[in-house]
Image (cartoon, rainbow, N blue to C red; front, side):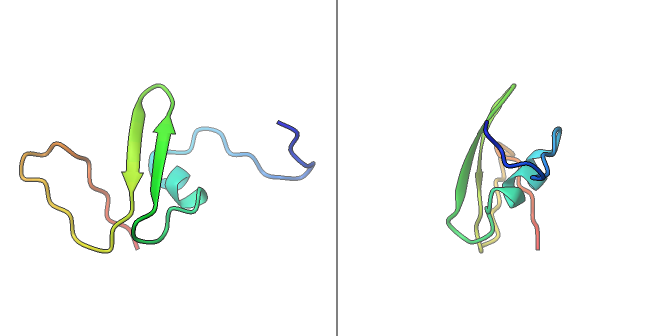
Length: 61
């Protein structure tokens, strides 16, 4: 990967921390995560509700 010596690499972080580390911090930002499973993470400044519980919703500050 040609990383510069001294750059911290974290293995095993959860999706929440991964999204923060990737810069997913303002409304409209989107991250596609592909690993064992795939997910699309979206940042919104509005409260999102899904009465059918089709989506996992994680509030953050």
